[in-house]
Structures are given as structure tokens and as C-alpha cells.
Length: 203
Image (cartoon, rainbow, N blue to C red; front, side):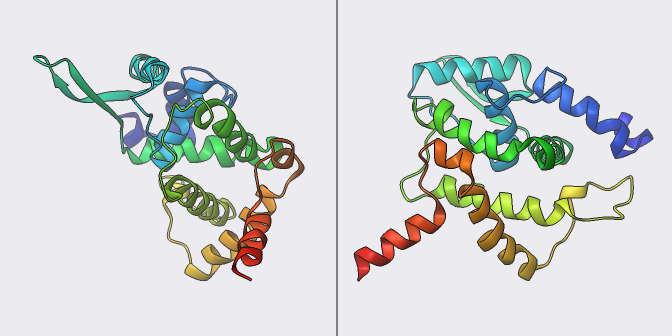
């Protein structure tokens, strides 16, 4: 009802607060980190890890994650993040709108590695599925971040964008982010160094 009667500028701060259960996004907080990335890039926890189950329980209690399947007989519970456009937009805004000043995306990727991937709370995939999805969404958001004159009733990060612009950002801007000093300090291999090492092995 609020979405119908108000503009995006009015609704989004409320949605962001409901998503985080906090007025400000902190990428060092594992619960907030999982919540934002679950809504933005469909990040899913690895429930074989008992500590990850605790993160899921907290996400259901406080971060708008919902129970999709509940088997009373076997005790099996399956949860998921809602695919609501307003929630997806809120996650994009938290990552991008403050990102120009506070490097939120950069910090998010760093803490994704240390706080969620390293302890085994999420499954990165066997052939780089998570990395590919992350880079594609990052490039997409960078393109749409520069979009201007979006009507107040339209979602900025749900606009159409050009394929050429997307590919340019994917190849250029994502590499600049991964080559930044903060990422180097976290000892994450950069895109360029990985391509170089692959070329040397093939040679």
C-alpha cells in the first residue's frame, strides 16, 4: 500500500531498514552481508555447515527471509530470499548508492571471502558460478548507477541497459575493483593476474 501511494524515494529507506533490521549497512556483519547478497545475487547458505544454519535462522527472524518448505514429519525446512523487486532494488541501493563514497561493494566482496566463503558458510560452486554471478551483477549495477532521469515511480536498478555498456563495464570496471589495494591486502588474486597465470600455463 505504501509503495502504491509513495515514490521510490519514500519507500526505499523503509525497505532497507526492514531488510537489515538496522539503519546502516555493515558488510562486516555476517547476517547483513548474507541478507544483502542473497537478495542481490541469489547467494544461498550451505546448510551442511551447522553454523550456517544459525545464520539462516537469524535471517528468517530478522531479515525478511522466509520458509518455503516445512516438513513436519521429517523436520526438514527449506528457506529462501524473496524475489520482490523492491527488496532487490534495496539491496542494489545499499551496495551502489553509498559505494561511490564508502567503497561498499569492495568491502562486501572482501568480507564475503573472509566471513562467509572461508568458514564454509556458502557454496562457491565447483566451476566458479558464484564469481561469475558476482561479476555480472557488479558490472550491471555499475552501468545502471550512472542512469539519470529515472521517473520517481520506477526502480533505478531495474532499467534496460545496453549490451555494449555492460560488456565494457564487465571487462574494465570489475578488473579495476579487484585490482584495488584493499583487495590486494586480502590476498585475493586479481582478474588480470589470473588471466596472466592461465596464459603462462597454456604457453
